[in-house]
Length: 385
Image 1 (cartoon, rainbow, N blue to C red):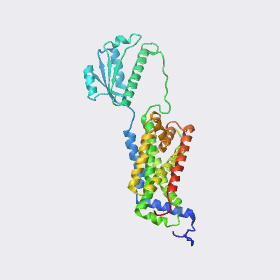
Image 2 (cartoon, one colour):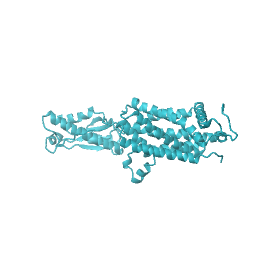
Image 3 (cartoon, rainbow, N blue to C red):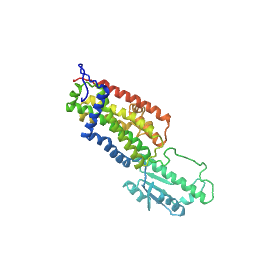
Image 4 (cartoon, rainbow, N blue to C red):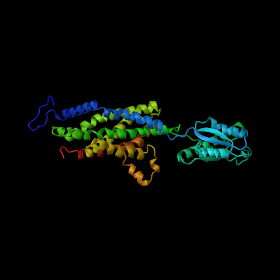
């Protein structure tokens, strides 16, 4: 170490700060010479956000639906016309139920809406006119959405028809509904912030899962162990560069979420990045623990994906509602750090700084970061074995 005197006991006089600075500088040089870490930090979030952001959607739009009208009239034309001006359906009119059923069986349509021959007459009676809806239930989510969309169009058409005739409300109870935080009901607004947590879990774990294993594989760990540096300085020196890289990836993900996917950011950017820093420390701690245990880059990489990415994807609430899971699985989700960060991200992006949600989840992240970093320090020994 240039410019650093060494005592007879072998300890550098430059102190811990100088040794730490040297370790961080060495790690940065290693990152520059081996840009795979830079690719993980910046290229991976871009690719994953583009793939999942555009590919994963819970919305049902342009659902093919067959309209069967037994006896055309002005009322049936008016009602079926409502299906021509909505983004939720791509309507095709078929002559009879036989053709419609054949189209449903062949998968050309996902639903059949039938208006019977007495539709116009039934419509004028107090009980109203029944409409028949047959939905392909193979995809249960889409089937439920189709039912809801058709019911909405039906109620809207009845109200419009009543107003055009100068009548009162077509239904006795008016539902004045408002949707908070995501008024457009865009699934992308809900999914993309949660996706950031899943991506940062993978990036954070992968970045540090390789570092210690790489030192052992290349044989440079032995050289590091004979220097005066303490193991805590080795770990800290490896955490800092990858923490900076991870936060850069986080900033890139937030920018893409806001400007590319047009997800509103209603909360504070400072709160978002403070919580992201807590979560990244947890993810880096998990990766470091895996790296110390595995001592092999391939095994460490595989373990990082299985132990971090898959649980974060399935059990964080990013796609699947935790409240709908069995009680045992709900308890297991409390061990998944991404669960807390997903909640924070969705709150900060869509609702704003709701401290009743942010503080408990941030506290859980602090506890998990301390546990994983503490376990990493406990398992990292400065000896060859």
